[in-house]
Length: 189
Ligand SMILES: C[C@@]1(CC(=O)O)c2cc3[nH]c(cc4nc(cc5[nH]c(cc(n2)[C@H]1CCC(=O)O)[C@@](C)(CC(=O)O)[C@@H]5CCC(=O)O)C(CC(=O)O)=C4CCC(=O)O)c(CCC(=O)O)c3CC(=O)O
Ligand SMILES: NC(=O)C1=CN([C@@H]2O[C@H](COP(=O)(O)OP(=O)(O)OC[C@H]3O[C@@H](n4cnc5c(N)ncnc54)[C@H](O)[C@@H]3O)[C@@H](O)[C@H]2O)C=CC1
Image (cartoon, rainbow, N blue to C red):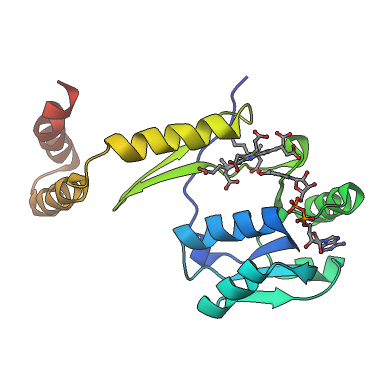
């Protein structure tokens, strides 16, 4: 069954905590900040990879805490991504998050995740998130590369033009919808 419900989150408006400062922590922080450079993110870990320290140098909104996880680190956070190399700690953090109704991702344990990260294709304002329902992240990565290759850079111009037309169109909702459907019909051929 594929029951995942995709949403696009305004991560700048939320507080995100990443637990674990290793390779996976780096991947997840990079994923967050490459989409939203100003998103407020805190990373807690006794040891933190140099690449993450460098990222914090470029992003004042990335706060580093050198400590082992404790439940008070969850305070004021909306989303938590767990990436320690200790399964028992990961599980405990997941339980703590559920108690507090905080959405949680445990990178190495799909069954403990409330949400998955996706492969992200971005061409200007167009963003496509790819999921394989946890089956093959590598397929998601490869498919992202295929889409990045085939989507033309001119897409942004098309979106800008469509926005201008959308803003100019007068009339009721029905009329606008019909016009915009008419104008974009060419995409289907
Ligand atoms: C369920 C999910 C939960 C989550 O992490 O959110 C999850 C779980 C796991 N990943 C594992 C491994 C790898 N993950 C990647 C890469 C990515 N993983 C991402 C997402 C997800 N990974 C979620 C499902 C997404 C979906 O539905 O497709 C991407 C898309 C987004 C991101 O992480 O930002 C990002 C690609 C970004 C890009 O480049 O576009 C690579 C390849 C690589 O890095 O080259 C490998 C090694 C190869 C392999 O093992 O497949 C393991 C085994 C760990 C172990 O063996 O210890 C588990 C655990 C398990 O499956 O049990
Ligand atoms: N979902 C995914 O994409 C993938 C998941 N994994 C899994 O993710 C986990 C982490 O992998 P890596 O980052 O490569 O490991 P790593 O060993 O590079 O990093 C682990 C980090 O966790 C920190 N840590 C340990 N105990 C902690 C605690 N109590 N509180 C806070 N931080 C703590 C360590 O200081 C270290 O910085 C592994 O269990 C691995 O199996 C691995 C590859 C891909």
